[in-house]
Image (tube, rainbow, N blue to C red; front, top):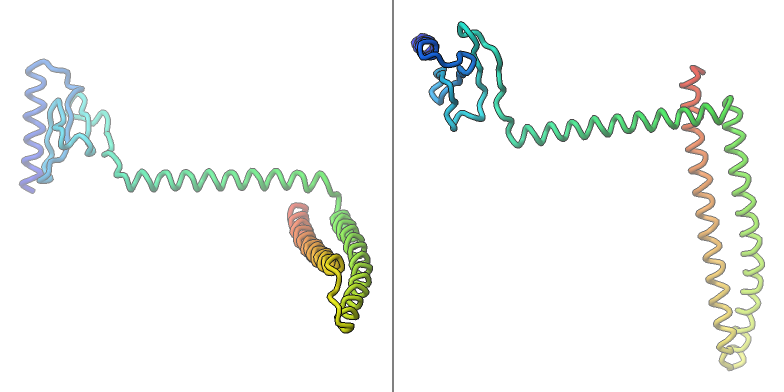
Length: 208
């Protein structure tokens, strides 16, 4: 209570002094010192320049209030929130774009399913063609392995060219297996992507 009374007296004396001296009353500023007491004057002490203060107008009424300077932690948090909001807006904009493409591309769920099946069928054809090639390579490989085995049973060293051919054929089969594995993984990705498209399409169209 005594602090509040002391603070009020300081403001009254400061206002009176400014009025009598003819200085501009709009320059009057008030801040809180380290003891929690409100002080006023036409210039804020450097040690309180970063704190919250009020600028008083005629009659001691608050004309403007300046908030205290924010801490580095508060500024960092603000930047984090701004970046988060910007990212969310970016995601929303991208989703809106994708929705527009989805609705412009397909008229109904059957169209999406048809597009999915066509892509999967095309990959199936590629897989079957590669499998057929691997089967032919495997037959050739088996013959060459048999030839090398016959030479070893006869106590002879298989020709270097034959051994290189065997290794080359094995690599081709291995590469084909990886290719097929990749195409099957691609098929699964297509199924998942189109499943999401169907679910999103239904939501946009209000289909149960």
